[in-house]
Length: 169
Image (tube, rainbow, N blue to C red; front, side):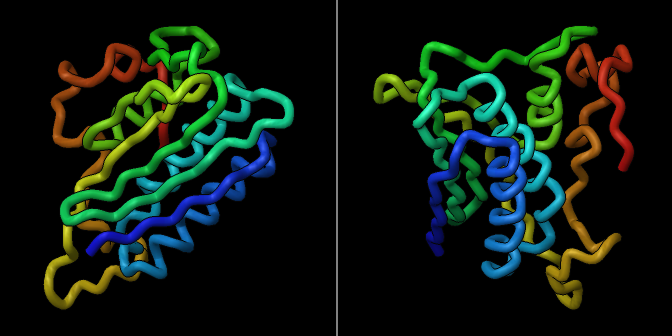
C-alpha cells in the first residue's frame, strides 16, 4: 500500500490553514482517520513555518503526504534552503512549533536541496485500530498515545519540561 498526495500552495496564512484541511481529508479518505489530530498538528506547524520563515514572493511551498507500509510521512518543501529550522527553547518567539512536532512525530528531520529548496518532514508510525474499533476519528478511539510518546517528563524536550510550551489535550 503506497499512497501519495502532493499539492503546491501559495505562501500565505490561508494556504497554511488549507494544508491542514487537505491532509485531514486525505487521511480520512485513505482510512487513517485515527491519525487526524497528530497529522493536523504537524502540518499546521510545518506549513506555518514555510509561510512565516521561508516565504519567497512568487514561490509556492509544496505539501506532500505519503503512506507507506509502516508510516505516514508529511513533507513541506519551501524555497529557502539556507534558512534551516531550529527547535526553540525557553522564551523565544520562534522554534516552539518544532517542539510540538518533535513531541508528536515518531521521527522528523530536514532534507536539503535541490538548491534553493529544503524539505522538512515528519513521520507517524501506522498503528492499526484494534479489531472492532474502526478508524472513525471520534474522541477516545485513537490508539496512539502522543502525549509525550511514552517519554518520562525528564526525557522530554527541555522547553516541555520547563513549562515553556502549554498544550491542552
